[in-house]
Image (cartoon, rainbow, N blue to C red; front, side):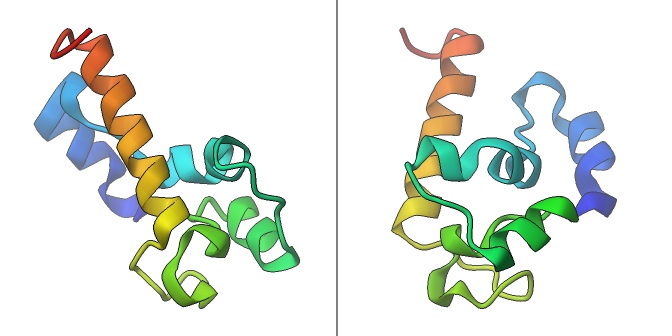
Length: 87
């Protein structure tokens, strides 16, 4: 949640990934999805779009679907590249 973003960054520094923010800003585009009205509302409030969530239940649904997990893998891989974990 937004309340934990700063604490997470402070605790993990460059290793931290703000998945919520990245999913809201580029998750749908990266996965080739078109935003629904529900997605647009969630994105405006800085939340993970429902199209990346299992069951498309909205902000209350915490589990990702196949698109959400693929996007998560993509951002983890990109962060690992930046940190020099792999090439």
